[in-house]
Image (cartoon, rainbow, N blue to C red):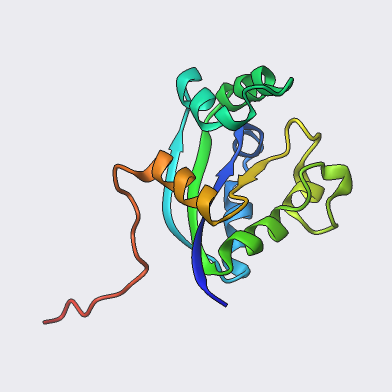
Length: 148
């Protein structure tokens, strides 16, 4: 196993439903560490840029509107196979297809409002993390002896 980083977003419906702590707890129980966190309200420009890969898809405008509809919690997760671990914890994109016990099966109401986003591969993770945390904010989970 290799230690890697993944971006996770708790989407507006997850924040509105007060699920931030529940979701973070699931990540931590699975052995993932939160090494960066930021709550933001995406502007149209930010949402369009982040989801530009979907620009030609029919759902793009609805996705952008949804992601602007309320604050999101953006996290960087770190751990062994963090990308795959996060995707397993999230469950299938369509909550109707998600395994019981996953975030989407437990909390999502529809494929359009499915509570969380997660990096789908190493290259995407690097781009997504840089998008939200290129200005800093990554905090290694190390402790120091401060008695000296």
